[in-house]
Image 1 (cartoon, one colour):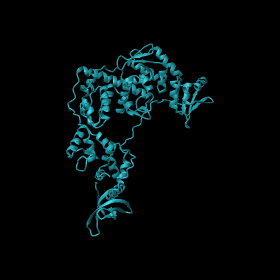
Image 2: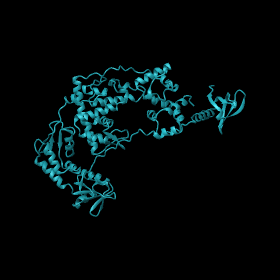
Image 3: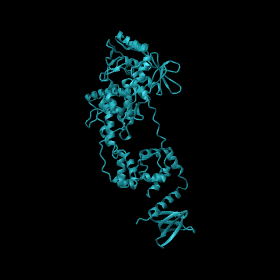
Image 4: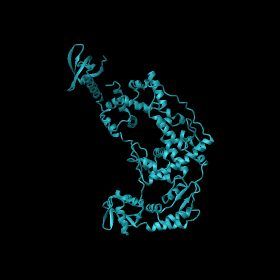
Length: 557
């Protein structure tokens, strides 16, 4: 048993719950760890693998201080980060010192201020920021229509990469969405968060500011104010950190708060708050980009053209009723299917035409009016209604449509069953309405009273449960076991370990007359509150009451 476990157990018992929580998280301890007391915890935390995880969490500054203190056997101040690494006097524990001294020299970081980007680099960074925010919006809009499928590693599936634009950048955009809290993984799906809905409706300056702020807030403390060139050095004892640092630096470059590249990472004017606690100001960034517009040209060929970047709020609604070509950001096309989708989502013919009239510089062409009117007239021929018994009913005044849906191969996953003049399924009503609309049937979702309602397609990821309390049960169990008899419990553990190892102990025993006597015993057994062993000096077997033992010390042969 480690001679350092007892002092560490006492330090753990004296720590606050918040300190224990932080230490357990950094060490990667499972919340269901089978520790029964602080002695178990201390022994586990002194294992080399656990110490390595604690060292990996040290910043470059902290690592230098620990290495210097280990070599000089001098005290060092680490705050909460020192729990489990330092003794009560602030000196590096011997098991930790052995691992630290075996490591290579630490790298040097020049600590220079971030370089300012040139005008050309700033202009390119602005264009890149605009493209990245646009690409992120494309990704989130696709996830709003239907959650995006992921593979086991968390990357987007090959199917999603084929159908979405920005193929080579999709995983970086996904990283950015997750890191800034706009999307979250749920059961191998990428789903929007509630914040994403507000983000999608915001203007470009607000979108960019939210993303830049979210990225900065996600940076670990070790890189808070460092130049980006030094980020890979921030956690020198974490073997995974260089890859993570490169990923974070790439994302910062994508959103334009870093410029340049190839080892040099200058900062444009609007990116300076990346290294400070100030608020991001996009004014200088906006000055290099085209202004957003709020008007479009509607054309007789059922297309729409925006003369510049369309305001996101207008763009989102226009996308809901058109087919959008991501390769041509300002181009939209109306089809019967796209108008039908808008109707399924709860829009009306009057609402669509009123919206288009308000934003069009050329009025609403007659072909477009005819398309919207004709699609709305057919909409509702197929009615989807949820029943209280969990069954979804599909009805239509046209029996031929029911026949067609019943044998449509694309609708087989719905499990539609003909029952008289209707079709029934156990699939949810909203999912059925969307499946029918995607298969080009004029479906509408109605409630129990027969009123048309919107079929919400987006599945929002609920807020992730806070993990602040995931160690609460473990910490409570450790505290419950640590009472006034902690010394006796520790003594029992030492004696049990000595018996298992057949160790030779120097046992200090309290005699009946109040004096103390030291015996050298070869530990042989423990039971019934008594320690058995051979007295080396007298060469006799002795049995000592454990309650009379004041201290024990292992004799090193």
